[in-house]
Length: 261
Length: 309
Image (cartoon, rainbow over all chains, first blue to last red; front, side, top):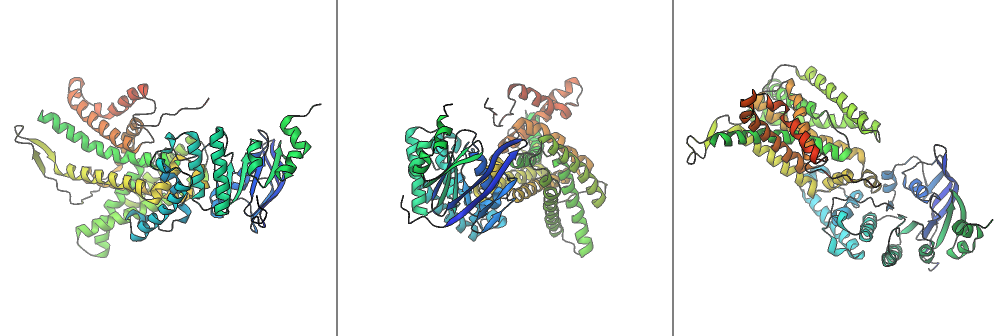
């Protein structure tokens, strides 16, 4: 990981607290993300990783704290507004459009780029036709990039799990996001699939310069590909730094391995 | 045999209209998870608007061209249905996001009664005629095969052709346009659709407008056959077993379900009804659905729901 490509801080998470009824999911979490970096959020099960991602993505609104992206503070935004700001995400429990083909799924990611209106599309007016072709070309590049050409027309519901994860990533990439949020991209994969996914994540970061925030349960994978790591445990931040620093942090070690009392 | 075929064709024609109404149900259910009880009221409202506008425009604007009057009336009725869709989204659905299905169902029940009332206040409560110039004369088919041929109403044939082309158009719209794709995406997964920047509110307005459009076409055809009156609102009750039979989430299911029930109704009325004294038409659909549900709880074409335990 070369230092030079990493830029300024673009995403700043400050003092986020989130609770559901009496259950505290997150307590006073702060961290930042720099442009072009791969930033991981790790922690044992139930540490609040997904809650954190959902706060950034606008699914949850935290009770306290603020999230600031390129000088804009967002409070009370829904997922769509966050998407318009340049965020894309993947889902831990695959939220693909099951009845639709791989191509159509990824095409939906281009929705925000489409400018023609309903009536133009309905009568296939010149502009709508041209737009569809342009977007399709872009999507084909993503399909090539993710090496899923043979499955273009297959309904996603029929693909094996590892490939569905790739389509999920493809749909997010189709949005040309500035920040890509990955919710456990390697969960439930075998070793080979994990290696593929790691390669894709690194390539996306390298080729498109996309800033990536990823959540992962499996510590070993994360340490290899991340620039900096935040560690959560029981909704609190217990570590933050480069993989090497985090690995040496005694609190992190005890959270993962348990303490001997 | 000729009589059997006549009954069969008659059933198919009625079934086509059930399909149209059922289609409105399915579209809305798929995209927003709302079981829209107001679909029948929408049919009535659209038909009333169409019938009255076709009278009013020539009167007020002082022209005497039937085709133009009908075209204008159709366009104006469509504008009304879009406005209704927009109002429903603004005033009802957007306030009830993420509520229980039952809550939404009750809300649409309220909308149905409101629309029944408001429609008649605005447009009057008499029986009106829609005359879009469909030829009424009967024709005889296959008279070389059967003695006397099969009597078919020409109007029915046109109506069936209109309904069928509407279904084809809609499925093409859903399959091949970006908006159609967004609609299917929302139907599959709300959360994911929102995270890729698809605006739910706009999609709902579109879906309700499309459902309004199918209601308008159904209302127009039905109205030109039987006249526009309050009982049109009750076709929703006929479409109900159709949707359940076909499966709530399946467009082809709505179409085939409509045809099955249309045909079944007519055949049973003619052949069984004569044995036991008639009146079968009214309850046939429901009993058929009951039996289907015993075997396939998800309907003929519905998605089987498998819960992870």
